[in-house]
Image (cartoon, rainbow, N blue to C red; front, side, top):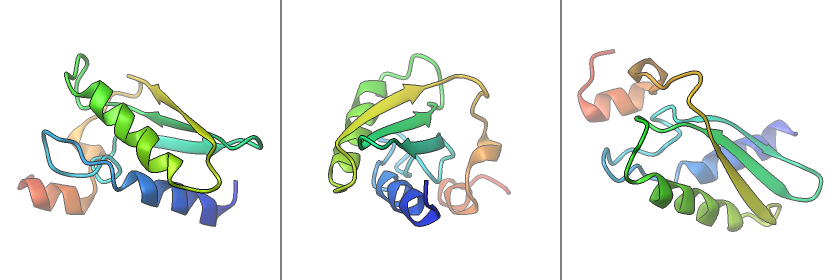
Length: 103
């Protein structure tokens, strides 16, 4: 996948805000990867801050909503994984500052 297209897909995912933390899922480090196949099917591999997150369905629906706004994307699969586990170390500097977490 072209770097510009991957940046476009990740940019769209920055519009998905974790409702509990108020920070987007990219800066939280929840997105592990995004891919787009030749048929226009996007696969977003991501995790959540905790297993059993009550807002998982909401976040997944938001991911699909922002991806469908891109003309290259015909459909989106959200692959939620637990390995590697999410830690605060995956957060961007921006997210850490916004949440008051020391770098």
